[in-house]
Image (tube, rainbow, N blue to C red; front, side, top):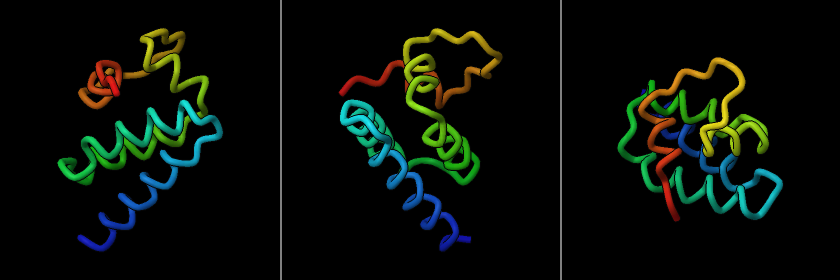
Length: 84
């Protein structure tokens, strides 16, 4: 279980770091590194979903401009409040 958790963390950090735009790389990498060690497996899976979204959708989530039905979880709230 711990090995799977560590693999998931590595995957999340990689995805956060290589998004396509330098600005989004910086935002996501700093956000992920600020909290990844404190997350349980369920929260890591949620973070994995967030870093898997395209940049435009992530920007909308960050700015709380949601046209679709995204559940605002604690992780999303932390992301929206995050400053780097």
